[in-house]
Amino acid sequence: MSVDKLIQGYRDFREGGFEASRPLIEDLVERGQRPEVAVVACADSRVDPAILFQADPGDMFAIRNVANLVPPMEREGTYHGTSAALEFAVKGLGVKHLIVLGHAHCGGIEKMMSAEPGVADDTYDFLPSWVSMLEAAHRRVLATMPNADDETRARACERNAVLVSLENLTTFPWVRERVEAGTLKLHGWYIDIATASLSAYNGETGHFEAVA
Ligand SMILES: [Zn+2]
Image 1 (cartoon, rainbow, N blue to C red):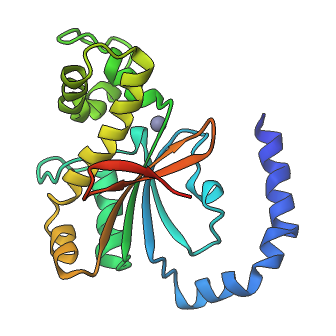
Image 2 (image 1 turned 90 degrees about the vertical axis):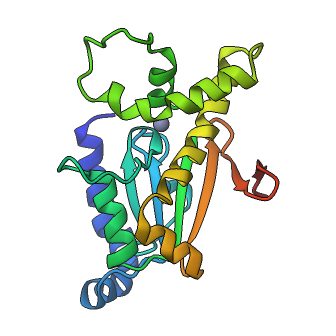
Image 3 (image 1 turned 180 degrees about the horizontal axis):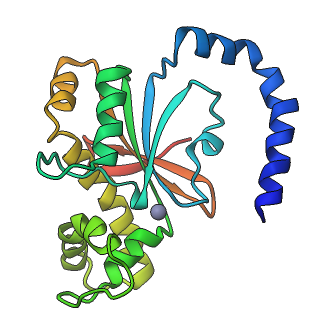
């Protein structure tokens, strides 16, 4: 894989997919994008939501970061990339659905799980504090499955991370208000990239359930 492959892909798109969806794209340019769905996905190169869900242009507003995390609402600080994108999706575009898409074999979550407590990371400046929002979830997993192997714990942490993000979403008043009014629905999904199996969190059972 190289940049040349991407350039070739661009040419193929320009002559193929772009031409085929030209009327749709012209409409999206003239009338603006109107996606009903926003997805928070990992930046991982294997979990591109547009590919996984076979989305067309205009279908989905995608927000991607390390470990598909939604941080809690914070007023301090300046550069809140994920929060700004969410705010635009919810307030600006009025999306009806917000999906947090977790995935198996997440490097960001592995990083958080392998961090030595209290030991400064001399490789990364930003990553440790970003994934540290999952530390409580990690502790919960360790406490509830003391005898599980690392793989099982990692899969549990990845699913728990989706729940942490769903919880954090409700700390934004403009999310909470819309959820309460029934104009916005939150979804927690999880995909195992090795088998392309998708599951969805069921708030009533407290479990991720396979999507047929
Ligand atoms: Zn990931």
